[in-house]
Image (cartoon, rainbow, N blue to C red; front, side, top):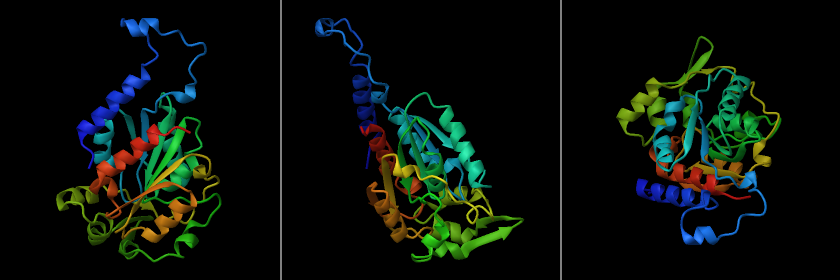
Length: 271
C-alpha cells in the first residue's frame, strides 16, 4: 500500500528534478555552466492527469484516486461523461484535455477505455492508463470481441427505461461494486450514470490511441462486470505494462493506492 508520505517523497524528488536547472545562491550552483541549448519541452515533468469514468458511474467514482494523486502534487481533472454517445463522451474528454497546461496522462475506467482510445491521440497526452477498461481497435466490433469471452454476471442485471439503462440495486452492489463498503457502494449506486441504450451498440472507434502511445493496464481478477480474461487479452494486445489486483470491477475504489501508483508510474515514464 502506498502512503501519503511516500507520495509526498515522490513529489519532493520530482520537484527537485524539475528545478535543477534554475540558478541558486549556493556555490555549487554558481559554478555550474549555463546550458548551451534550451531544454526539450518533451522532457517536461508530467503533472496533469485526466480521468474518464465508465458506464453506471460518474466522475466521483475516482474520488479515492484523486485524493492520492493530488497528495503527490498532480493536477487532476475528472471528466463528467454524458454517457449518451461515444462522440459526446469524447468531446467532454477533449474539452478537459484542452484545459491542461502541459503533458498529461489520460486514464480511464471501464467504458471510459473506449473514450480514451478515441481521444488519446491528443498532442498533450503522453500515456494511457486503462483500469478494467475496454480498449477496442479502430473499427472493431467490440461486442463481438467480448462475446468470445465468458459473459459477466452484471449483464443480467441491466434495467431499461425511457431509452436508458442502469444496473439494478442488487447487480450494482454485488457485481459492479463488490468489495466496496456498503455505505460507499450505496452512495455510488445513487450517483450511477444511466447510459443511453444505444451507447454500446453504436460506438465504434475510428482510431486506437493505444497503438501510438505508451499504455498501462490494471486487471481486476474478481471482476463480475467485465470478464477478467477479456481484460488480460486487451492488456496483452496493447503490450501494456500490466498489474493484476484482487478486486471487483471498482478497483479505483477498493485499491486506490495501487491505481494511483500505476498512474504515477505512467507520469514518470520516459519514452
